[in-house]
Amino acid sequence: MIHDVTATALSGFTESVAQSSASPPYGDTALLDAYSNAVVSASERVSPSVAKIDVTQSARTRSGEERERQGGGSGFVFTPDGLILTNSHVVHDAKQIHVSLADGRRFPAHLIGDDPATDLAVVRVDAPNLVAVPLGDSQKLRVGQLAIAIGNPYGFQYTVTAGVVSALGRSLRSYSGRLIDDVIQTDASLNPGNSGGPLVSSLGEVIGVNTATIMGAQGLCFAIGINTAKLVVSSLLRDGVVRRSYIGIQGQTVPLHRRLIRFYDLPNESGVLVISVEENSPALRSFIRDGDIIVALDGHAVAGIDDLHRLLTEEKAGVQTVLSVLRHTERLEIKLTPTRRMD
Image 1: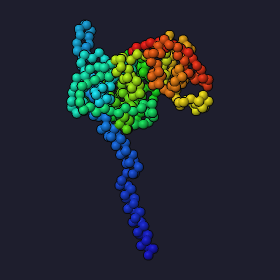
Image 2: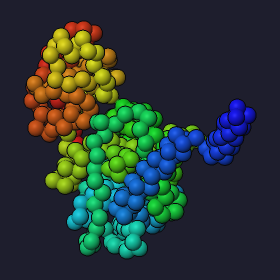
Image 3: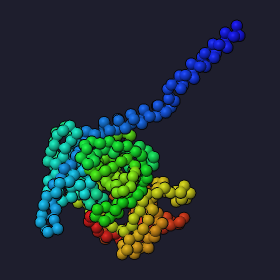
């Protein structure tokens, strides 16, 4: 009797070991499936909105002769009536623009406006049955979350790559020479032709506009935050250009210490850290310093770079403005007068 019970137990144990060694751990399989499903779902949702943009530009040879040059990049439809967001450097000074969609259709497009200072542009196509991609909120991003890039690298249409958000709050110099603040760094692989394409979250929402890589480096790719793009697009649609007031700082969004939030009863948990102050700028003349953290402008709370850009409108140029800054543990109200700047 004892012998029979022991044999049965040993037999069951052997079968259990054999099954566990034959199949991978359930947890790893589930994680891989979830990752794959997230990438597949997001790419299927966004790919119909991704555009391949072909551009004809004029270029001068060394002898001064003018010739046509072919170029291009990517973009994405963000309204059903044919508005497409892309990079400024893709369509700047274009003589002709053509847009190809994932369903094989191809249309001529015209430029609504571009902003070299943020490397963003809007073009329009007259086409029916367009699918607009949903826009997310780049201020809610967290380092490490999934990031999916869709574009047309080297002409290979609708290529999908995936990685993570590697860092937030980077600064990147645009083609116009101006620093673009609050840029997203990702390791989703980008190549020439990806410029202007969407950087997408696992929910299938656009969180950034892919804009640049560092040649010779691996895993260093950058995208303009979609919140910055929303502000620029509204100005381009209204005026065709972006008019700004200028204070002359370079900054990034940073979290605030809890003690400062409680002590000064601040409405937000973040502000804009001043990384550097430009020469002959309103900020320098008003003694803004590196390391100051801007938390309000004329009484309006500033939680990040996007808020500061939104508040520094053309109407602020030439008008005395009050910046609320934290310097170490002290809160200061500093008066300055922004100047007009058009990029």
